[in-house]
Image 1 (cartoon, rainbow, N blue to C red):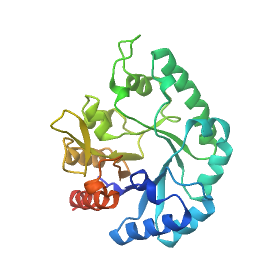
Image 2: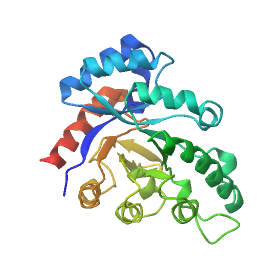
Image 3: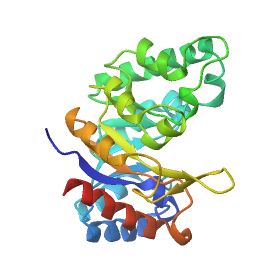
Image 4: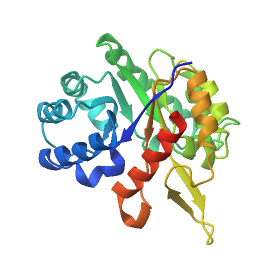
Length: 259
């Protein structure tokens, strides 16, 4: 079994990657922590060549991105060119737009749309990768299946890959380890996230290892299934409101898993 490469989903630090100078400063901090792999998401509008310059400066590579479906539909060639510049072969979608979640028929429309994107990406040696939330694990109103059932059963494994987010899977009422097994062979990157339910019954994201998700079991499953990368992601609720502090805490937890 090969140990997955640990890294950081930069969406966690999105406020600090909106221009080249801040991107440089952020990657400098991550490099000093020992990070050598990131996911790019919610980055500012500056050229891929500048991103690549900063990445190379800090000896950090990109394993996957998150980009919008509109851009995939309207400027896929441009996205592909940008990914070639930053040496990334995995294009990710952070979520299905709301209009494609409502019914099984709508989900199937989404599947067809992503298949068309996946076919183009495949010709360029790239893959389409889908990141889940919790809604994919709820029964559809016109079916006895969930959206995730349809995504697993009715997509082409060569054209549709997954970025399983273990906290959202858990919050959606499913077992992350079981879901990882169902996705075998279709995952390059896993998202490690953690959460609690607070005294008011509200979901609150927390640093890795401080919540409800059995991340050790997920890590062992990732090794067994030979899933190459695990990225830490925390949408909000950072320690003392400090995304870097939360990242440092979570990175220390990830390193404890590797050891």
